[in-house]
Each structure stands twice: as C-alpha cells, then as structure tokens.
Length: 146
Image 1 (cartoon, rainbow, N blue to C red):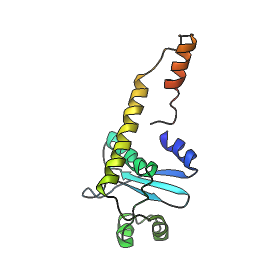
Image 2: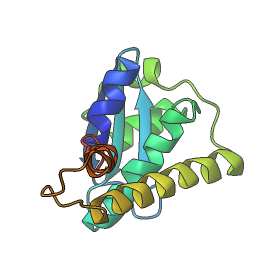
Image 3: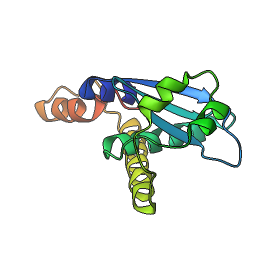
Image 4: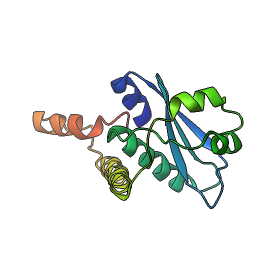
C-alpha cells in the first residue's frame, strides 16, 4: 500500500482513520504529530471517494503543506476520542489556500492515474527475452501503490 511505502520513506507512521465527518465540512483531514501522520477521512461515503480523499491528504503530506490548525474546541467536538493535547501538538499550519488545495488535488489525481495505468499494464510472465523481463520488472513491480 502506498501509505506503507510513504511511511517508510519519511520514517513516520501513517494511520488511516475512517471517521463520520460532518457532511457540510471537509471530507478529509491530515493531522501530523511528531512521529505519526493521521489521515482522517469520511467514513460514510463510497470506497472510491474514500480512496480519493486519502490520496488528497497524501498530496498535502508529500507537498510539504503542513497539517491543519484550528480552534481546539472544534477539534474536541469533532474528534472526542482524540486527546486534546495530541491535537494541540499536532496542529501546526495556518490553513490551506486555493493553491495548496489544487496542488494536493493534482497529486491525488496523478497517483490514482499512475496506479490505474500500472494495473492495466500486466506483462505475460511467459516472455523470456531480456527486454520483456526489463519491461515486466519496470511496470509490474508496483507494490506499495494503491
């Protein structure tokens, strides 16, 4: 899974947390702590939408945007099962502007398109030529994607 590879590369855990976010609010949220990135995503939507939400939040992580910052009382109300001190330490960013959102959306789209392409490029294992083996190695070894 992509989050496993990203966590290894960044040397920080990534935890995906399905959560019943309010329908009128954000579909996803990234909360970065000192050693873990929590991605909260809308529990009550389709799997395809959940995947896109997660990829969007990953887009913020890989783009270096910083995690979301807000009023503690809002976080306590939305996420009563997350300790307030964890939220206080985790929330470090001033808020995303439209540019950050577009960038995160672009990253999500590129990752999804690339993963979909790799799924369609399955090379037969019967091909024994060096060129066929190199192609298969380049395109079939995509463990860590979606």
